[in-house]
Structure formats: C-alpha cells, structure tokens
Length: 361
Image 1 (cartoon, rainbow, N blue to C red):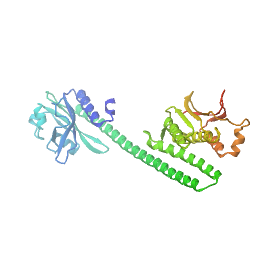
Image 2: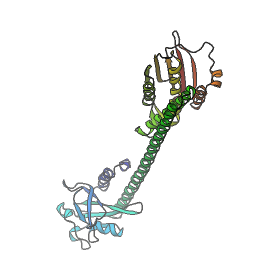
Image 3: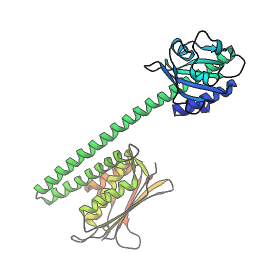
Image 4: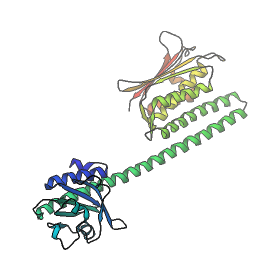
C-alpha cells in the first residue's frame, strides 16, 4: 500500500489506522505503543476518537486489559460484548466512547513486539474470524513497513557516518598539504638559487591547488562533490594574491564535479595560469589573465587567455613537453580527463590562449 511507504513512522501509523478502520467498516481504530515501565500503552495514532486522545491518552498494558493481553501473549483478542466481558477490564477510554466491541492484534517488527493495532465499534454485531484474518494481515503489513523504515534509518546513519569520515579525511589531507606548502615556502626563503626557488614555487602552487580542492570536498553540501565555480575562482583568487601585478578574472558555471575530475582540472588551471603569470608579460609588468569555464554541447570547455607577448612563433607543444615538466603534466592530466587541449595565439589580437575540453559528467 502506498500509504504504508511513508518515511515518517508516526504518519504511517496514522494512515494505517485510518485505512484499517475503513477496511473493517468501523468508526474507531487506534495503534497502541508497547507498555512502558508503568505498564501503560499510549495511543500513538488513531481515528474517530475525541480531541486530545491521540498522542496523549494511555491504557493499561497488563494482561488484564485486551490490548495488554494481546501484546504480552502475542494472541489476538476479540471482545464482542465489552459490557459483559469477564476476561478483561474495559478501559475507561472505551467506556467514554460507548465502545461495545473490539479486536486487538499484535504488531511485530524485526522479531520484536512493537505495539497493538485495535479496531473498535460502538454498534451491534460481531467481529469474526474473517475480521481477525484481515486485521492480522494488516498488522503484518505495518510490521514490514516499520522494519523498512528502521532499516532505512540505520542505513542513513551509516551513510552519515561514512560522510563524516570522508569530510574528516579531506580536511586532514588539506591541512597536511598546507603544512607541506609552508615547508616549501621556508625552503624557498633559505635557498638563494633562482632556479631552485622557481622549481619550489611551482611545486608549492601545485600542492596548493590540490589542497584547495580537498578543502572544497569537505566543505560542500555533498561529500566528494565540488562546485566548479567555487573551485576554479578560488584557485584564481589564490594565484592573484601571489601575483598582485596581474588582474586574474574568473567566470565559471556552477557545475558539480567529483574529486576524480576536480583535482586534475584544478592542477591544469593552476599550471596554465602560472605559466601566464611567468611568461605572458615582460618582467616587472603585469596584465590581464582571463579564465572562462562553461558547459557546451555535453562537454566542459575551459579557456585561459592573456593579453601578453604571446607564444613563440615556433612553439611546438610536443617538443616543449620534452623540456617542461609543467607541459608534460598538463598533457597527462588532460588524458586523465579524456579531454583535448589546444595552445596557441589569440585570434585577432595579442596574447596566448589555451582551451581545454573534456566530457561533462
């Protein structure tokens, strides 16, 4: 039944009592919780009762009450003449509503007794074996629904725990990488060799890109997912802070990426922007560097442009990759993304342009 698929147990029980009453042709139905320490069973859900009963009223949960007997023994109880009932006492709630007959069945979930489903009537007539079969079948459906909800709750708790572990791991990785970056910074300050300083600076930029990606991974609403605009523009801002002479502008669509895509993309972006910072403009001068990332025809396109001196006329990416670690990294990471990259001059104006395309997730 669709009504029994609700993820809210309280709402499901309320719907169940309403449907059960309808199926039995009765005005009253209720679900009673398991007896508490004081042997009282609370009316958790119900239909037909006076205001203030459902969720508040309690009944005896010992074997001297029909519901208590059904719960403790597991045996169904049919009382067709409550006014003359000698086996059990009639609860005050039933007397106040002029209830003449009742039928109680146990609801079990995961092998444990969960509560009692009861249908009541103030009219003449009798509850019989067919009514009992209907009630027992309905109680079994409620038990299955409760088991499913409890299983989902356990699964949700497990998933939440796993997400917490992933967030913690990403946070720790980010902090560890930040420590490595700081150590590289100290080494750069201690070494006077310009070549060593440059190589260490390149390594630091790459480590920072990975660290920022992990930072986004644990901060996001969905674990392991990064918003492309936050990642790309965050990296751009960090590079801009290190290069105050340059105007690094970033526009990226809010595309969600997994870590497997975000990390290589962040490294490629960092490498290309770093190259523009170092080589696009004459030493001591600065200029504009533009980053644009968008989804186009099922692919993600990242374009990085500058307005500088441009690439050498004889620039050959394949030949350059043999001499440059950065270019080899870009080529390798592009293959990892199953993408393509083109580097060349900007059309119709000065400067260089790099365009990376790869399948959108």
